Picture (cartoon, rainbow, N blue to C red):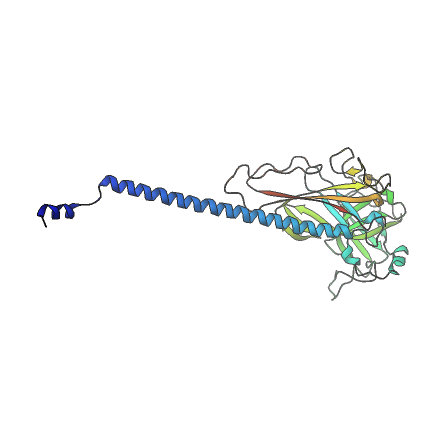
Length: 337
């Protein structure tokens, strides 16, 4: 081997410029790889969050729709449902508790309802919302089958439950409207139910011994983006519950224009006492707005926009949460049958 050739092989290598170029290329590949990983991870987080919100909306709506379809079962038509309307926040929904009387498959029980098992006598004249009222009922078990346990003794003893709802109706004049209340206490032995009126008519007390009837109910309401049913948490990150009520005012067998309440249309907003005969209620439209638990890392400013459904105004502003809206119209199959 020629000496000069051996020397060239021993001194051959990369120049500083070549090293910098190679390092820059490797850095670009690394940055691209990490960026791709980050984007994929953020996308996965968004998909998981949206999927969870979607599944929650389906599960929640299925339960509410089930309760609405059972509403009015073996109770007066006007006591099937009651609602509290809010234009600047979520609505509250009361539906007669079909779970408490679904065991009543004996047709003879219809006679016991007609005999007055629903009758309720207020201890004092019922006044405005927010007041606890004690009502004495003929029996806290309206169908002969106890459903809920309300005391320290084993076994169920009442069809009313603490934390659940109650619907108050004038059995002598159903057109007087319906009233919604939360059950605060049940004294099964004394046949007394204490309710906190959530919806009432301000300044117009309900007279004592005026033929009132009390029906156990489920109550759906949202507090701090948490949806509860009878006081038990159903789901979190539920932003809004909005309702519209459809009546057959002319009794032609169908819901016509301007027969809806609480929708922001021509008819007024939902005020239970001022509504038409509650027995003419035919359908309830349900709107649920569910948002993701986590923010969207790809867009921290305008990932989600608050939804104004029915008569809701001033919905939550845009933020980094994705939202899903579920809307369903449910016919009350047990009303006016």
